[in-house]
Each structure stands twice: as C-alpha cells, then as structure tokens.
Image 1 (cartoon, helix red, strand yellow):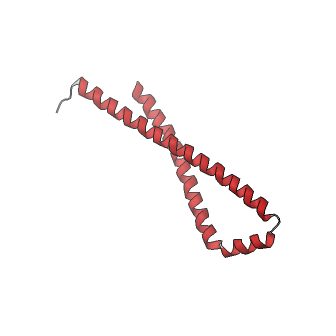
Image 2 (cartoon, helix red, strand yellow):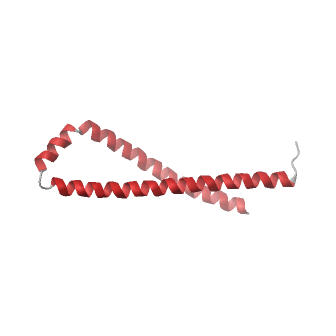
Image 3 (cartoon, helix red, strand yellow):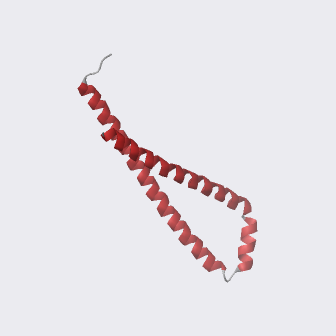
Length: 102
C-alpha cells in the first residue's frame, strides 16, 4: 500500500513526539533517582553521626539485620544498574531525535 507524503510526515511527527515523551520520562526518572540518592547519603551521614556514641548498639543491629541489609544492598545495585542504563537510553534518544530532525 502506497503512502502519501502527508501520511509519511504525519507518521514521522507521531514517532518524533513519542521519542520526545520517552526522553522526558527518562529525564524525570533520572532526576527522581538523583534526589533519592542525595537523601540516602544524608540519611547515611545522620546514622553515622548517631552511632558514633553507640558502637555496641550499631554492631548488634548490623549483625541482627544482615539478611535485610544484603537484600537492600542488592536492590541498590540493581537501581544503580537501571540508572546507568537510563543514562545510555537518554543519550540514544537524543541521538535519534537529532537524526530524525534531518
């Protein structure tokens, strides 16, 4: 089935708009993760400060929560992996939009 120039342009505009939407979503997700990581760092500093005067309590809690901390660490590694993947996706989407402009 042959398509007219108008139909092709309409499809190209639709595709371009979908790429822009996806790029916006990826940027928003990245910003949310950046905020999460910044707040996580603040919490870690606060915990370190609190437990300076309670090293025994910290040791007991660390031993008690080993399984939970391992799971939390694995989730953190997965999030960092997804974050890096998202950065690549943003780069690819920008390149696609740049190529699509020409």
